[in-house]
Length: 218
Length: 263
Image (tube, rainbow over all chains, first blue to last red; front, side, top):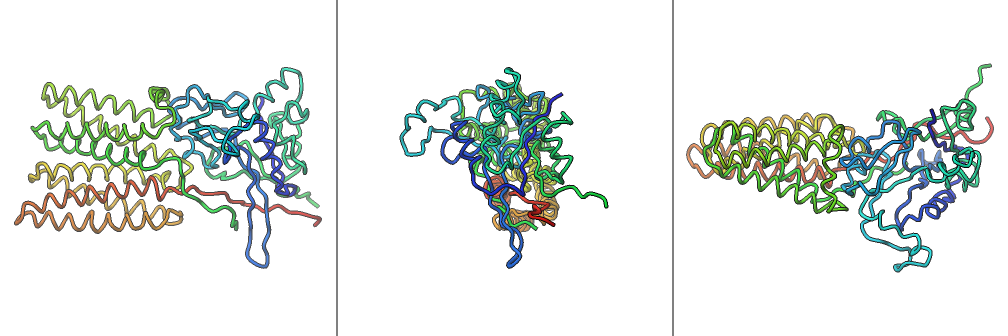
């Protein structure tokens, strides 16, 4: 079995938002919609203050609350763990948006463009199907699937890897199959300490945050 | 400790969704109350039908793809919203039968459907993991008792006899207890001053005042009407605030900070 996951190395992320831009470019999301965004968090109290950049988005949970609450079965989970939305089934009730603990879902009711009217690139990529329905990060599943068909390895070969991961200037983002013990993500998780966001909710996110090397016993 | 993005209010559901909980809950509560007092008049059931239909119509206005509303029936396996829709359908059918045949059994069935409907409403909130003020288990009792208090409040406007008054008294007390338990469970959660204020109003104007008015109704029957109105309005206000203004997410938090540089 395959289970695609993403890893964000918090030690490496510099908050440049290139992943956000790459995602918007790859997925043609409208203004205000960021399937991949980076939080700029201040932690601690003066003078011991730290700044941490935290990439967030759909966590592609193993037990996704958005899927359970969806009344139309538009939200589903593929065998490889990617949580999808069928735009033809979704009624846009936004129940999934309030059920998601990661604020990863958006609904845009009318076409919006960066400069008011559609620029040529926006006009070409405007998708009526995505109006009035829930949208979110897809882990660039089309790229992953197309890459797999060509025999490429997602997370290793750029053509089969999500746009945000490809664009990361600091190699903070990684993508791969956690079920494959030899994969890049399995190696990273074996070598580092990590956590997942709001793990106490039991959603089992498919998005891991690295924060330190693993302690090596002396 | 993390001082990252603090919880912010959800913006996906507004007054249209809240109206479903307010009107639908009251309609369901009214049906249950009418069945318990075995009321002979068809008016409570007709009013309940209008309230539930109004609530569902209101939430229909909120969905993004209105012509696909039928898809709401597609996921009874896990979605409480689908189950609520089925319960509403059953409620409408049973109520129609009751109105045509004036059967006690049909009224009982309508009340059971109404009970299922309001339970589904409560579970809709409970299943929303993204909102701490909704996912608290105590929200189920709060929504159900609030609906029943509102329903018996409407009955006090229509037929404030001794049985209706007794039910009403029990309902507002049960609601106050449910609110207190819910509030205690939410102590650590950011849900804003609005919910606190609505809760205080529920206890004072929605519980103490109606109970005093019920006693006063012995001497002045019109006081029962005021008691009902107070219970309805405070219940509606609480649900409106709960759905719109107290619905904060939990933001993001880092249990660990990145360790940078060499050690």
